[in-house]
Image (tube, rainbow, N blue to C red; front, side, top):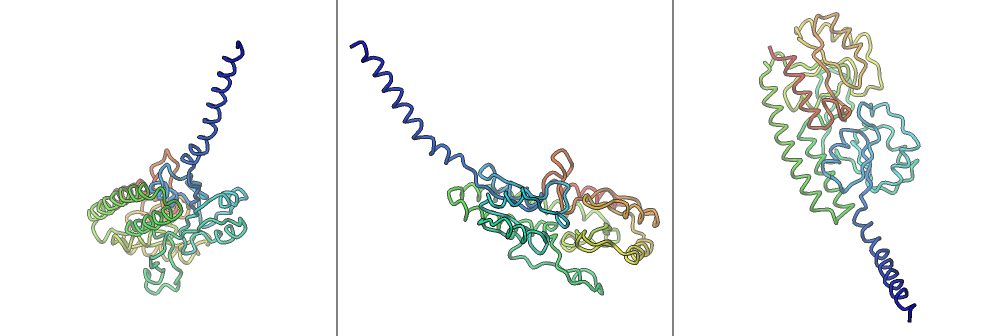
Length: 307
């Protein structure tokens, strides 16, 4: 009889252990996050805003990186292989992405967030310019960013129906935030006289911004940083700055500042500050989110271009 008590204790411990083990898969399942990949930092921030804590996000081209000239690594292929959804900008922004998808063998859904958008072209913006390449920098117009968010939301719901309510709720809140951002940009730029609404940068990344908000764009480089500006293009811009009495030249966060500095020196225009075009800043910088980036650029433009 003296062995009955230990046996009961042992049986109770065993039962508790079995109960704990049986509940582990359920708990683990509820804590599992949807693995997703975004091609570059601006898009990654949008995915994070909609996905929240329900997604495990990897960003291929991080803050400060240039997606035009990025060279994928073997670890990038592994990220795609593990992902359920891969978000890309499209419009040939990530020229390396198709090869990476093929080489990774990923079974993930590849979602182009510019789906439903009609791209601008160089020809549409620059009369007489012999270049008709589509412009991929659509996020520079907040109305297009709202389309990105809708496409992100729908893709996450399709991949993870159980999280649909959360994705919709976060997307709605973010879309409201973007409405306020768009109104603030229009109000801020409205304080700049029309003849001073000129953005001169080294790389033509602000075409959608100019078309949406009434700014004239001038740049010696094309829509990609892969090609160098010719001496003829730089000379043309210098002449135009002198002719139009352009007050400021802007440096881009992903471009070599020396070209902008040379243009400023030869024309007397001042360096108006740094604009973020294709990439966010690190977390401790002035443009660590899409909304923060657009507000930073607005501040730099109004500070430099207002009389």
